[in-house]
Amino acid sequence: MIHYQLQCEAEHGFDAWFRDSAAYDEQAARGLLECPSCGSSKISKALMAPRIGGTRQNAKPDDAPAKDQAKQVQITPEAAALRRQLLEIRSKIEESCDYVGPNFAEEARKIHYGEADPKGIYGETSADEAKALQDEGIEFGAVPWVPKENA
Ligand SMILES: [Zn+2]
Image (spheres, rainbow, N blue to C red):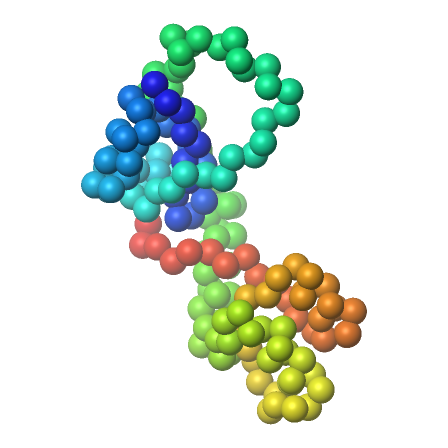
């Protein structure tokens, strides 16, 4: 048995066990994996945090929990409401701003220094670039970009 930490497109994390890595690949490819929280079948392996200490070496494969004991994640009404608000924010941004992709920092500077017409833009930037923009006094905000889904 092999243990994977998985997550869906809405970043609900859950644990799952497979016979071997090929079994995971096959089930993922056929869309048979489902998020226990929202039922999404867009599942990927979660990024694994490095394990500190390494005390699990003595764990026997027989100690592996059965698949039906996989962790369940419950979405609270508060979390669902927050998610809806973030989705609304996302929609408003998409309606009223121009998407500039990875050129966000460059475009934001042009607007700030008057080299481009003032307008709302959105896009991606690195943490370093975001820090540089802040230091230059350029106003912007970071918005959690929630995936759209029909759940
Ligand atoms: Zn989910």
